[in-house]
Length: 421
Image (cartoon, rainbow, N blue to C red; front, side, top):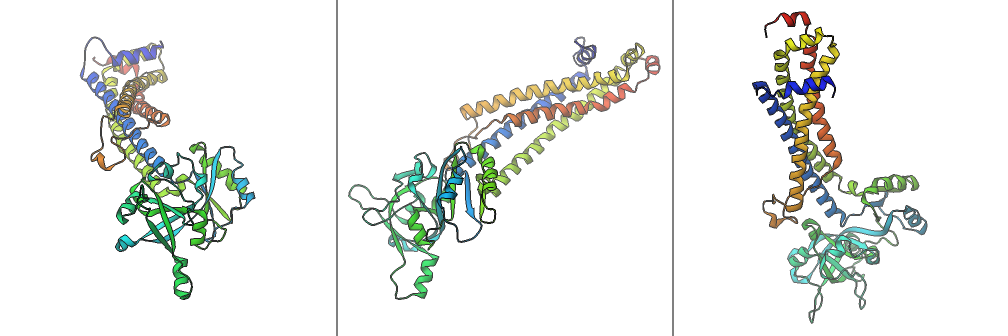
């Protein structure tokens, strides 16, 4: 072992006595450990919340969405679809139509509600897609049966309107949708046939409360007719084999399409304000908790300065023996690094252990968990966050040792050796 490391280790762990300086040093290392452990646990929990919300939203949001710059939409011709599906990681690409309409139902006319109507081709969906998998009452069927088109809506909305897809001898409920273009036709063409389109309720899905109460699904041709879009669509939803490829696919697709006609959005862009707030909370909490490590670093400055004062004759002797000021400085910088290694290492082990226990056993439950989709605080351990926290704490400990090390290197041998011990 290098002599500078041996001396630094000796100064920190003297076997002869436990001095006040040793206690302060131990407190400093403990502070670093607690700060690192708290950062790791909090970052892991915030990552867990972020991934839980992301997975919940992506269950009905696409990985990438292509929308028209113009309000009237665009026609999904074969060449466009071929370009979209040319990327090797594309799992599905489904055109959709989306707009707002009034949902009408005779049984509860007092709660007729404006909903977001999503028209889509149900054959493009997989059984593990969020809306399909979340259809727990009835089935996700938008096809025409006996000339009547199907509709699937949220379970909460169905319960409010006393609507059900039927079963046994009970017939399925019927609802009507009235869009803005239909209202316009009713006003301007009094003698025309009724523009209200009726649908048969085929299923009720249960995902997230706000989504359940505001979204309904119909077939793509029905939505195009409802909103008078002809053969045009509002956009194309793309799902990839790997969610993490969304940004790379976005960049590639944007280079292939006309920017004046199409806009390419990732899952993050679709809920950007929410995701930005969650990221801001994460880094805000990190800054606050890192103050624990900063306070511990000030303790390191104090303890190492006291060591310099206590060991000034030893430093003078080292300088008289030919040890350079640079090497004296390195001795005390090594002390700071040793304190950082012990503190950050202990905090790393403690933080990972607590995070793993929460992940495996859900030790800390959410207050009022019966109102949430999860029972305990979620945890997701990111190696990059762990590395950043650990190296930042270690670097701060070394930086805290700079002043005591500079002061030790400035000691004059002759002056130090004349002092009383």
